Amino acid sequence: MRKIVLLAVALISVLTIGIPTANAQGSWSTVTSPTTNPLESVFMVSAGEGWAVGGSGTILHYSGGSWNIVTSPTTNMLYSAFMVTASDGWVVGESGTILHYTGGSWNTVKA
Image 1 (cartoon, one colour):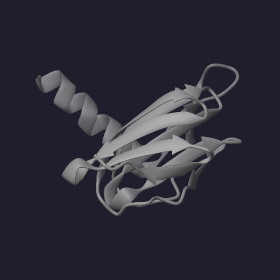
Image 2 (cartoon, rainbow, N blue to C red):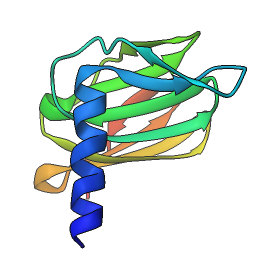
Image 3 (tube, helix red, strand yellow):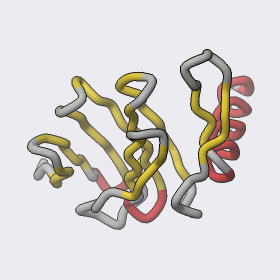
Image 4 (cartoon, rainbow, N blue to C red):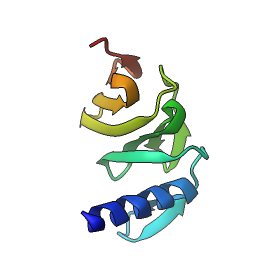
């Protein structure tokens, strides 16, 4: 359990400062995050595309070598992202928040 907590803290620290990404040569480089909000989860669809979520409803999309802020339908803390495909994904957060990515945007799912 302690290893998982330490790994999570290290991941969140790295994501808050800068998000490392693998380049075509297989080495790591740092890409600046466009937010100072804490980030809780990253899901990479491929080496060139991914999503990150976190505090205040923050949603970031990685494409074209940089992370960009995406419009979020919530200000709740978002804890986890999972993409089924590049065009279909899910995010969960505090207070039962569920978001679904389809049709090019994130939308709230009513439970």
